[in-house]
Image 1 (cartoon, rainbow, N blue to C red):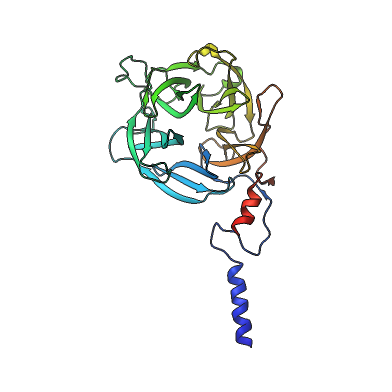
Image 2 (cartoon, rainbow, N blue to C red; image 1 turned 135 degrees about the vertical axis):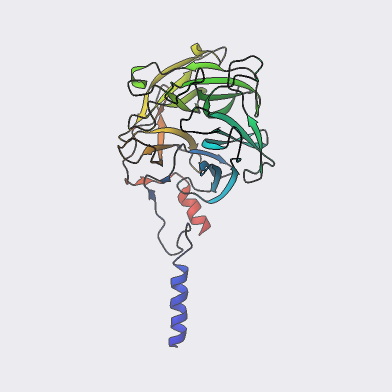
Length: 353
């Protein structure tokens, strides 16, 4: 009898302690989460077929996490590693995963050396299948310069994102007007229409420069990390400005004016800001919907403390919309404060137990 009771006791204990990353069968489902979610920077999250794909770089490689939850990573796979030589052998920054016409594409910044980070360009990877966890081929460097032949005099470019508008494919990124011998060079936002997901159709057009008081005043004037946000027919480019290594990092916004003839014209965009800023800086965001599709959420990174540098972590919070159609991001939620989990996560938790 004693032996039988011991077996039952051991069984109960085993069931109540699940492997790392899983939820105990006998614990109460936690209804809240708190920031930060995990270490990292430049978060990119895309939702497809009820999964959230979190794409990030680490150790000169690109990784993807697949999870049914916004608030934690799931299965992780290394997708690609930088080659030992060539233009993209180091400094892999801010990869973004996009699904375009049946294939997955990863846009990333890289350079041949640095610091100083004066060689950064943008490359693209293409999946072999419609599965983001399939193998990828390196489709090379994208042209982000001004020469009409689109072959020579390429230019510094980081943080590229792509989007479709009116059945056309566009790329937006942060770049320099000219090459420089120092990475303390102002950064601007450029746009170009694409011929395909791996090639530009036209040369770049500069649509925004750091020219507002809330964008300037620090050691370096820059605009970077552009991301697309749409709502009720409005098209926004939400971008980061001020210095990423300081507490002054913040978000600004460009809105496409109604009846604009071309997205490639600076006059097509109206600027406002800052729209999001916090005590430790807040920038380089991406956007997604809650599991049930009823809520809008922003992923972003912030510094861990006030010391200048790039020790950052990933954070998440819900945002709403103003009557004029603009997003209302509010203020960054304090570290450690409990936040209600995204709508639909609890139901997923109950289903997989």
